[in-house]
Amino acid sequence: MWVTTKIFLVLFVVFFASSAQAAVIFPSVIDVSAMPGESQQIKIDVKNTDLDNRSYLVEMVGVDLGQEEGDYTFYNLDETKKAFFSINTPEFLLVSQEEREIEIDFSPSQEATSETFIAGVQIIEELEVGGQIYVRTGIMSLLFVTLGGDIQYDVRWTDFQTSINAFTGEINSYLTIENTGSGILQPDGVVRVTDILGRVRDESILNTELRRIPAGQIRTFSIYQELPWAIGPYKLDLYVKPWPGADVYTTTETIWLCSWRVVALFVGLMLMIAIVLGYV
Image (tube, rainbow, N blue to C red; front, side):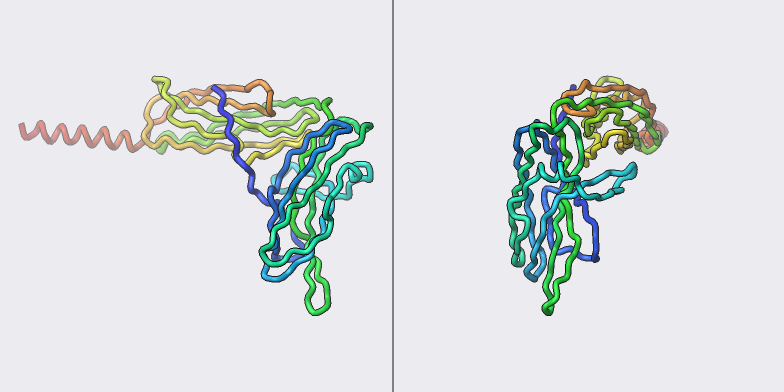
């Protein structure tokens, strides 16, 4: 009964020193896994979308995700972690509309201990105008790094709630998850609605944005569904894996819907029958 859907995240993490950016970077989020002593290659594409030529600097920074969505704190990686990353082209020039692939080797040492952390590949723009160089703190690609194999994954399902408008057939589901382990979670699942005969009336994906949950943090995921022609009891089933390979967590609720469309159709049919019988 498990369905896995791969959806590529296209959310850009952007922070500004000026109001406009002249580059795009993709992918904006990358998962990186390696054992101590192994090497993984990371590839990131940067494109100059401006009409002018641009110079770029590439550097690695540390990233802390806050409890609120979009709440980021940036810091300097310590020398040990910074030494794990090797950028093939830390400085380069792009003419207008030119695109370049940046290769970054992630090579943790044999002595590295198991941990998870978040790093950022920061792209800094430089523009020379009238002999002066203007620097824009540009865009960033986030790296969710899993180093080593001794990572403990655990989760606490804190809440699953539904809000229903029985007359319109609208269903809003909310799942709140707390990451109580040391690994980074990426929940994947579905919410399925079936009628009294067991027929699937709707199946919607949980976490289409591929949001992560860092260790010690809580996230709430919402799903909107609509059954405009529903009437009677329906079963609402949640199936979710908090991380790949985990057991499927499931819960079931029974909901009642009475769509005004069905009621209006029924009343209309009864009136038509009454009118027809009145002429017989």
